Structure formats: C-alpha cells, structure tokens
Amino acid sequence: MTSTEDVAPQRVAGFLPARGSLAFYCVVAWHVALIPTILILLGAHAVFSSAGADVEALQKPAREIAQRSVWITLLIAPLLETVVLALLVTGLARFVRNPNVVAAISALAWGGLHAAFHPLWFFGVVWSFFVFSRGYLAWRPVSYKHAFGAAAVPHALVNSSALLMQFLSKS
Image (cartoon, rainbow, N blue to C red; front, side):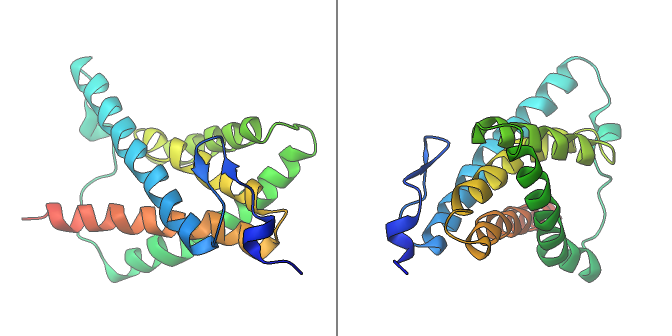
C-alpha cells in the first residue's frame, strides 16, 4: 500500500489541507473548526443580546467542571458522536453526491440536536460539525481509521479548548 501522503486528498472543502499526515491534518482542522466557531457563537450572542433575548436562558448554565463531565466531553462524546456521524454521512452520501452538501446537512442536524439541549449550542457546534463531517468524508477513501481520526481528534481538541476556556474564565 502507498503512504497516506500519496492517497490523502489535497484539500477539504477547498480550504483545509489534507495532504500529509493525519496528525498534521487534525491540528489544522482543530483550528479551522475552533476559531470560526468562537466567532459564530460570539456573533449569535451579540445578535440575541441586542434583540433583547435572555441569552443566559439560551445557554448551558454555568457550573463547576466535574471530573465526570471532563471525561464525557473529552473522550466519550467525540468517540460516540463520531460513530453516529460516520453512519449519518455514509447514509447521506448514498443519496447526495456533493460532499460539502452532505457535510452541511450533517452539521445542521448536529446543530439542531445540540440546540435541543441549549439553543445557543446550535451556533457553537454547527461549523465544527461541518469540519468534522467534511474531514471524515475526505479521509474515508484512505481508510475508516483515518476518517474516524479526522473527525474525532479535532472534535476532542475543540471540546478540550472549550473546557479550558470555561476553566480559565472561573475566578
């Protein structure tokens, strides 16, 4: 078999490099997912606040970070959600040929699912799940293991960034 560098796609969604090692891809995807997600969430917060909405009621209540929630957020959620994501995008890809459309449908579904718990979470996950879905689809021709890693590792890194920001924001 050829090396990953020979078979990995050159670009994901036209902007995210997928050439080279999976580890490099995951680090880049982490930032491509995280930075716009923060900006989208801040923008949504500003729009809802300026419209007079009670944004505190729309977001997850602040609480101490428990060891249990750390393990769920950093390990269990990315692994389980990536299994579901893989099933979802594989099923969608049977009917929709454009991988960006498949990833967008997946992202909207994940955003809606998260919004069912806390409405502002829609804005906090929709872009990230587009990146995770697109990464999965781009790396799937290489192997399932690569595709799973391309979605799960950036997901875990984004979640760890969110937990770190929450931890550092506590006085």
